[in-house]
Image (tube, rainbow, N blue to C red; front, side, top):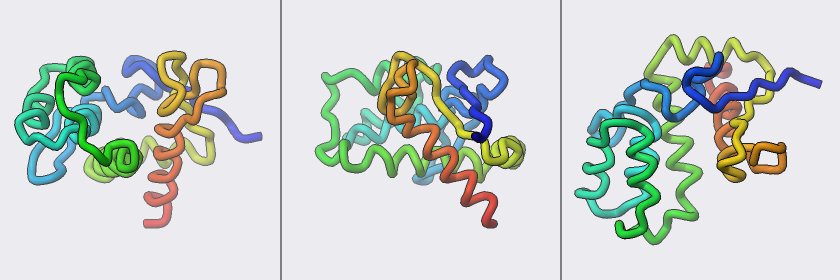
Length: 147
């Protein structure tokens, strides 16, 4: 049984795994304050919605704006959200060498976003969730290892 590393808050030991961690990424010709900003902005087709979220002062605010259904969600969001998340996480861990090292240093540990707030990206708090963010992190770790 391999080690399990749980993360959620940016203040945790493995807080750098969180999309709220303050590591800017460059994607689509723009710089995004966090991977959370990028992910939330890409939910919307309208460039002005994307830019408003990119400009959000905090990742929490970006997340809140991303949940605002007064903005028009892009039609293909459900089918593209995992690849958008993968793109954001890959950018974060390939554009920051220190993060790349930290991720590789987790070895073969299972990475789990531990939260009862989310049973899709996280573990649902009780392990019943899909843990998609953790899975993507482990996937990117494999890519980094293969380099």
